Image (tube, rainbow, N blue to C red; front, side, top):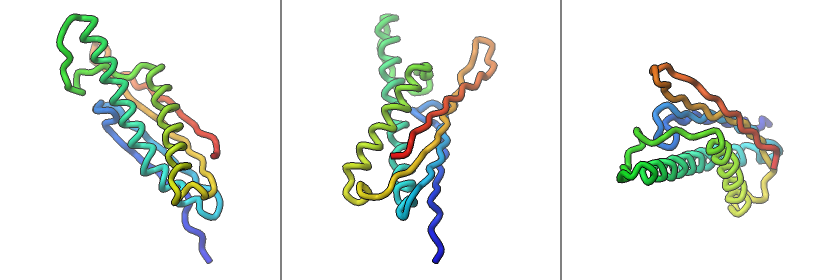
Length: 143
């Protein structure tokens, strides 16, 4: 009997409303039901990353507007890119939230674990309009 492929992947562009931000993920399922774990994480982690990235960028834009004494404008195209600290927080928080949700979901909470390796890449424009690419690797251990 053939075992199902236990791996999944995801490519999501425009993370957090940022045109040049992408999130690349590989989900490595383990055990008899590893494919279900990988599929669950694929469906949920990317949503969390997008939501948390957007939240971080909104907070930064609101802070910038307040600092400059101008009105906050809801326009992701003009919001600041994530800082290194914000990107790290986004990875950590989204992984923890996905893990917590998975454990609470009765359909998958008793399944064997998984491993994930993701790459969050975004770029911004320098003052000379040269693209600079930043790549953050986020790795989660088996759960």
